[in-house]
Length: 196
Image (cartoon, rainbow, N blue to C red; front, side, top):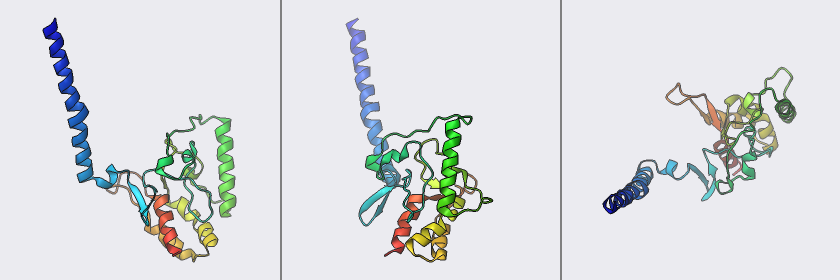
């Protein structure tokens, strides 16, 4: 019995060292050497200040900036990685009256802010929150609809802002995975550099 207990304790100690020390250290070292940016949170730094992560959206309604899609968790009411809590969706059914009302309000607000005609479709990601509530991307169409508002508010030439949007369109990975998209934080950081 004691021999069996000692064998179990030894096995427990060996597995603890392997899975609790050696494996995590190996993976951490590998990540820091091979993928240092990703291993450290894909942080976006401007003038030695961390502006956020390229993987986590930031909510703003400031007319000087491009807007992200709505968030069910309000991007945790913070604009920095340190303020981030958990992610989440609204969990409202497609048949939910609350969801329908929320989407209608978002559409009206987006149309009014961008002076859109009734025949112009508002991109769906500007009406519905993402599953995580932290999606950092919008479609090129959603970014293009915001060009006039941003250019007018900042007093910039529309074409300069339009060129900036086009330069920040990310194509699908290897040409087929995903959709074309724009990282809103990267676009807004680039927009701030125009004011200098």
